[in-house]
Image (cartoon, rainbow, N blue to C red; front, side, top):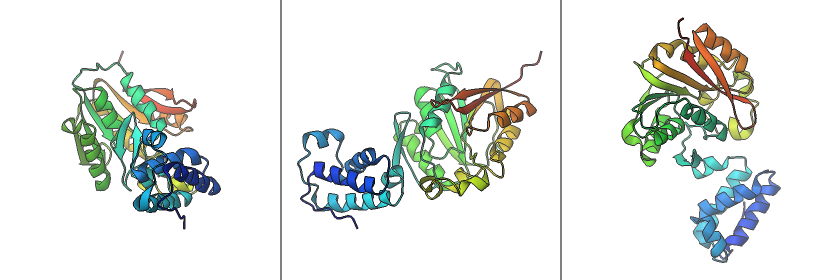
Length: 290
């Protein structure tokens, strides 16, 4: 058990937190310690800098000790604090949702670069919406757009709905239970998805932070990781408005497979890379008859 005295100063508590996490093999010990201290004590980075000698108190000591024990045991910081930032916006998490990852911002950047007018009344669909981060991010950039987020998990839908309201787009976002696009009626100007794309046999070999804390339903893409893409590509093309696009996130080794699936469904694929240079997003549009 990690012991922290109530009279411990904020600065000393942060130093102790770094030591505890580093001893536990946490590579991001300094960053994680700062986030957990701020969350546990209800303070900001400015508070720590200007009032670092203030004692953490009994409640702060108990809360921080519990946080550190969970992090040292391998639980991700985002799960401990129950929220994470994406596209500069705050998102609450639940056991049914993935932690939003920076790589997924490539999908948002790609969608925003498709040429849709910022003030256009676009219709969007987000398949497997999870926390709603992709849909909410896009609606925050397109103030007249409306969107529908679908997910098979009722818990994820509750979380996404709350996140849309929290970020000021709740009046333009609807959420419903659905199996990809099977129950949708178009047309949509844009359909986006970050589906499960990890092969079933690989899921159990993922790091404990992912395997033990992310919902398997959002990770497991079937025997070859492509099950969700097959369903989406079979369902979405007829739902696209003229000039509409389907934009999906993919795994780093799935570019060739997605190009083949897109071509088989009469779609022209373009691949965009993330900051690490890996194939990350595929943009698809119906082929234009000549």
